[in-house]
Every structure is written in C-alpha cells, then in structure tokens.
Image (cartoon, rainbow, N blue to C red; front, side, top):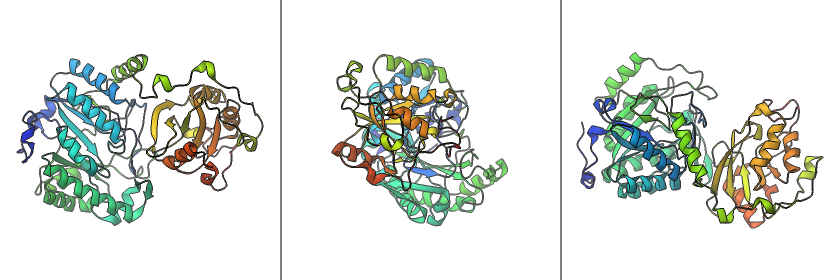
Length: 465
C-alpha cells in the first residue's frame, strides 16, 4: 500500500501488508495487541475521560487494568500463543506513552528482546515524543500515530483544557501553539528515521470541522503517510458530551476531500488501550485480569523491592488522635511508613477529592522525577464509613496522603491510623521534594482549604454519613 521510506531498510521484516491499521485488507487477517502500560497523560482534551477497571466502553483511553512492563510481556506471550497472525504490538495509553516514557520504553525493550521480528507501534499526542525518536528508531518501532486535531492555536484553545510541559500547566492558545510545534517537529523526526506516521484527527462539530482538509494538506506536506478522521465520540462527564456525533455521510465526504492530499484510513474501530486480536475482536478482560493476578502472586508488581518494604511486624504505634482536623495536622509520621499516597486525576498535580478517587498513586519521596511505585484501588463507596477503615489498610505503608479535598470523617479515620492528610494544590513533584527534604507542605495548602462535611461537596462520596 505504501513504500518504505529511506532508513526503514534496517527493518526488512517490518512490512505494511500486515499492519491492520495501515492496511485495509490486513484488518481481516492480522491481529494486534495493545499493552496498557501508560496510565498518565500530559494534557486534557475536552472530549476525553480516561477510565480504568472498565470493561463496558470501547474507545481510546479505557482499560480494564494497567500493567507493568513485565506484566505486559507476560500478557503478550499468552496472547501470542492464543492469537493467529499476531503481527503488531502497540502502546496506546490509556494515557500517553510519553507521559510515561520509562514504562513505555521498558516495555518496548522487553518485547523487542522476546520478539525480534514483531512490529512495534505507538499512539501519542506528540507533546513529549521528540526526545525519544532516536531510541524508538533503535528499537525498530515502525509505526507511530499522532493525534493532530488542529494546527491553529485559537482552535486548540477550544479543544484542550490544558497541557503540562516542564512541570508547568499551560492553557489557551499558548498551550495549543506549543503542542502543534512539538507535533510538527516530531512528525518530521519520525519520518527522517524511516518510521511511518499516521495522523489521527478527531472531527469535532462546530470546532475543527472546517479545518479537516487544511490539516490533511499540512501533514501531507510534512510527509505523513495516512490520515484517520475519527468522528467525535460524545463521552459523558466531558465538556464535549453534549456535542453530536458526526454522521457517516459527513465523514465520508471529508475523507474524499482530504484523500486528495494523502491516503485515508476508513476502518478505524476506536480501539481501547487494552484491545487485542482482530480489530473487531471482543475484549478478553478475564485473560488480562488473570495475567495481572498471576504476576502479582509471583512478586512481579511494579513496586519497591522486597528489601525496602517495611515489615508489618515493625509498624510503630504513634499516638492516636481522634477529634479535629486541626489536631490531625500535628500528627507525627512514622519512619517505617516511607511512601506517600496521592489523589490525582492526571499524575502531574494533586487535584482530586479523595471521595472521587477510584485509585491512588503511591510514591517514594525524592528529589527530581517522582518515583511512582504502585497504583492502589480505593474501596468502593458502597462500604460507607467502612470504606476509609479499609483504605487505611490499603495505605498501611504510607505516612502521608495528599489530596485536593477530603471529608471530615475520612480525615479523622485515616489520621487515627497514623496517616497524615494534606489538603494541597500544585505539582506532585514539588510536594514529594518537600517531603524528601523535610520542607513545609503548608506552602502548598489550598486557599481556604478545609475538611468538608454534610452536605458533601464531593457529591456525597466522602463517606461521612
């Protein structure tokens, strides 16, 4: 369908005929596996709601669970045994691969060693792709998809709530301008290395609809190989939830116009981050869950080494306090609780109410890039106040919990179990550096921060009844 670019000769075993997304016929004969190892995202699109532990939706940004690189390889090996004509291994989230570069690259290395002839593929927003292009080329990555929804900053300001770069959150036209500049450079860098580039463009009615043909012409001018126009999927709990989904006739017409500039992908299934098999294959959540459970039982979790984990027999018994949040602030942290739990919607900032968090990120405090050692699910709201007693057990090795908000009840219950709660705002990196250096987290306290009570501002999920 396409000719390999100069530089791709180093990948003689990687052909386009067997990639189900780049080749219309291959979708019926060749399978792919998406490895969900990249949970964090460095931007927020107004149409996106990432979901974890979800088996009910078939769209990007959704996975039934997140795997460590080692678990991902185990899963791939199992799927390879069970799947005919498995030709492509991809990483497509559920966040962005290069908001999680260590996990992404480690997974690619493991797969390349085990499967030297397997095609490797990535899907990214392109914001943080450029620094890793050379390594992707060295690993033999053959295909990269970049989502380009606009080349105009004023339109991007309508599509993206924010992007995060260099520890700073940018908004509006400034953010969109930076994103497109990074995407443009990344496209050219990938092509110069012989990596084929597919552009995904989400067609958003009344936002970028009139720009689709211009986007096609622009990316074709950069050398992109194929364009995939994807109709907006109106997703509940997003800013674009009320927009209509574009009809098939409109998509067909735009593809015909954009097709004058470069080839079109017309068979996209809007795959999940944990999709496996042929493009229309159902999700095998049970197999994915079994791999996760087996690897955890074998001690393969992405967590601190056994030597560094605190022994449960050595938990210290610091004083029990049980009355007010003001007293809670003075709780001393035991040295055998080395980790910090964080409620975050994006993995970059402390910005989530505890009652709305279905999982917490567990970090080891330090200077520099935060070292996340685990994800831990929070107990279900149906347990009421008992939810927070159970959560205290989940966080038994955490001395601190950083949240954007918390109910009075859980605040007291967690403090009574030696977990100091900080209601703050700002970057996770800054907070963990303060913890590591013995700094004062009060400098990050939210303005007018307080512990809420009935009626709960978190929507009744704080557990204080």
